[in-house]
Image (cartoon, rainbow, N blue to C red; front, side):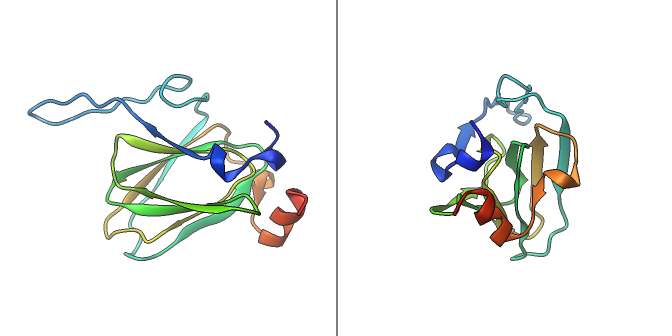
Length: 140
């Protein structure tokens, strides 16, 4: 699918396998298996003051998979016509965001950690950071 054709309905929560043990649980992620792309970059957001926001951009090519590794936050997604919100608060659920979707992470709980797995290495030219330019890219 071309990024300019991505829709809010293409954003989805994927429930990840959780191995439960009395001494603690574990969730393992493999690129191309639980995460539906080859993982090229991993980063995480942390020490975000409670109630703060991050993101507010889209990508031309990069697909992202967000996990609330600790705490909670909401991801607002927008395809230029439709918007939706996804609340993440379980470390065994991830939100798949295809390229061409404007995403913002908001309302971080105190001490939250947002784990991000990306299909591409960092490339500033892959970012759409201006909403008007995003709408133009989407043909709106």
